[in-house]
Image (tube, rainbow, N blue to C red; front, side):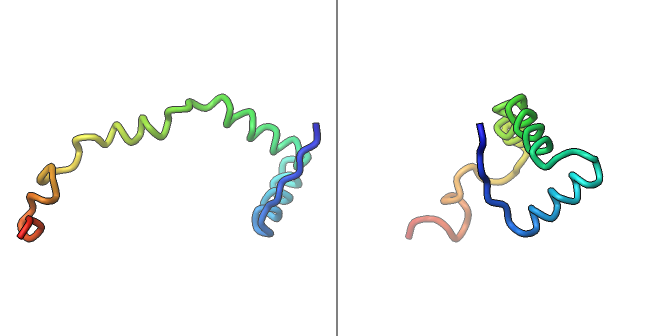
Length: 71
């Protein structure tokens, strides 16, 4: 299957430079990136966010902060 994508000029330059540096085709590099993204944990971002849970201090509800209460 053939797919077309649009890259910014900077992305296209970086892809071409990577292809030249590694001796691989641009298509091969993009296919590899796709395979890696498929095999990555789908919840990686969520796990990183959960790792931060409870690491902040202060009031739980910003409306309880002085100056932010109802008047």
